[in-house]
Amino acid sequence: MTVFIYMLLGFLIVCAVATCLHKTLLTSIIIFMAYSTVMSIIWAILEAPDLAITEAAVGAGVTSILFFITLKKIRAVEVTEQEDEQKKK
Amino acid sequence: MSKKRSDYKTTFYSRIENYVNGKDEFLFHKEVKDDTVHELESLEAELTEAADLLEKREEQQRIQDNSEPHDFLKRFHRLYGIIATLVCATLMVLLLITVSWLPRFGEAANPANNVVTKRYIEKGEEETGAVNIVTGLILNYRGFDTMGETHVLFVAASCVMILLLIAEGEEKKSSYAFDRYLEPKNDIIIQKTANFLVPAVFIFGIYVILNGHLSPGGGFSGGSIIGAGLIMYVSAFGFKKTERFFNERIYKIAKVSALCFYICCLSYYFYMGAHGYDNHIPLGTPGNIISSGLILFINIFVGTEVACTMYAFYALFRKGGL
Amino acid sequence: MEWIKFIMAVICMVFAAVMEIIAIYGVYKFKFVMNRMHAAAIGDTLALFLGALGLMLLRSSKWFSYKIIIVVIFLWMTSSISSHVIMRMEYNIDTKKVEEETGGK
Image 1 (cartoon, one colour):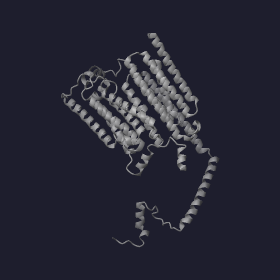
Image 2: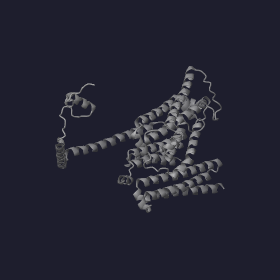
Image 3: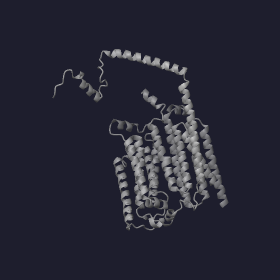
Image 4: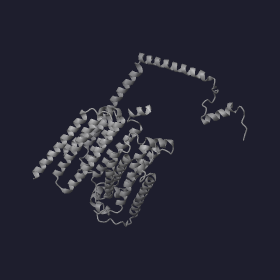
């Protein structure tokens, strides 16, 4: 079990660094989702299931959805083809 | 009606009035006549040519003497990087040394294991009636703290509303039209799956809220689960179908009434506790669903509040309105 | 009997882990988004089922098995649907390339 916890902690550090250093915003949000999921597993191992449920629902679910919507609003997710077609019309 | 002078437009006062109203920018200069449009165009062309020339010259100059400012900037960036790395490394080393001096996690002699913790663990179930010590702790012993957290949620939702709520008009129409941009419209696969999944998610959230004092969970976790279910329903069916059962009016009523009832429950507790009265609320047998006094109701109110906040965040971020 | 159950469970779990590794290899090997999605989704589905089967065999209690079956059904629905949504998003963003790769409409 200790080996498993150390693996999870190492994955957590890798995820945290990769979230900061990645260049694309979309990818760093997805890495942040992975971070939240691993964090919720660690909460469950530390015998705090309430926190695990909240982290899984808020950290991995709602927060990243809000990030995605923000990316859509500021047009960071670009359309290559559709806009061209709309311009032609 | 007062008579206007024939040459009113050229008087000083009218010019000031125009300037104040923002119609005319030239306060003390003569007005631009219509004949001078051509002259203006030629002037503009000359100006653009001159600007091009200037840019070219500047580029040449940059190529010629890029020694001083660029060198300085480069040196500054290098120094900045080195200093930032050093500061971060020293901070990390200091914090790690501090952590290594801390007592081991979970030892009996730790300062965290004092009278308060002992009391919570030994008499928590007896005094609050909740089997789940954590819920009894955060909703009963530390109810004031949790009330502050719920208010933080309320204020956060209000701030997002101030920032992102769009008033009625053209902008709202365009944002509603932009709403399902880049998304599958009426995708039957998602809709059929949402028909199965959304009730399951709702029931799980309600279960977590109602069993907050018996099993792990409570208002915050259950509310966020219900909020996630609402978001899934919206992304499958769109806002028009959601507004049948959850629109702005219901949002306002649910949120404000939940907060008010919550404050009523807690202030009853505080008043009775501060004056040393008996609060006349039966605790019931620990382990039953209807037990532990007001904790069950407080859980329901917190759950409503959190679910409304989650859905409001999603709707406001997505289309600027509920 | 206990030993046979244990060995079966271990075989299931190991096979699930191998499936996951193959899925990750596929995600990094393919170039086109839909191929990667296919590899990830299919590997995920089988690995999930095998892992859950191994858990059920390890702890052979009735209610635990029911819970695990519900979890498997939930995850099968959600993971396939999320793959579908990401695929739709890719199609919306880069319609031309998708049609080239899949041979037009």
